[in-house]
Length: 114
Length: 113
Image (cartoon, rainbow over all chains, first blue to last red):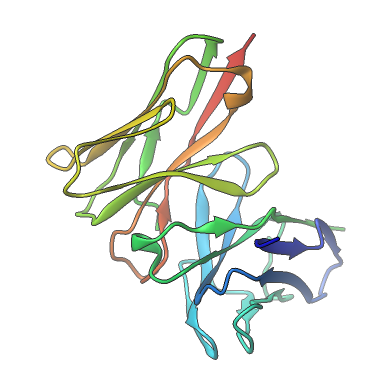
């Protein structure tokens, strides 16, 4: 059963804490992405990775970090430097360049601050 | 950066009616895509239209693209309650995002029985 999964579904963060959101895909896609969605808003790009061991900052990378050690996995860490982390986080993947290919999205992780 | 802007922000119709959503963008594109998002869920790809295409159909969906006006429309015919969702357009216009898509803020569609 192919697809893209995210965990956990809900995540609570305390002040000053780093938290990591998981994203896994078994679609054999090269490219992976992290987006942030705030209520009533569209998606804003945090980081993207076109290939293993390579990733690039998106429009709102400050306060976030990523790694791409395996093709299947693209975890996102929300660091304590991100002062307003409450949002819905979406991970996506595509075969290659997103502009020429469909992006497949995970179900999302909702991050809340305690 | 958000390239596309959907219009209207919200749309409420009755089952059986047609729903039309519009998307405008600012810079030249190679492709434009439409996605659907049910509340609290991930996005699902609906249709991709290339810059050299003017119209595309998929089931009850019809997408048009007018590159001279930098706009696209999504028409859902004979709408159903299950079509209730947010609809986003996304473009591949070059930006700091490189290979990612630029999404608009979406149109929230409510279809009532």
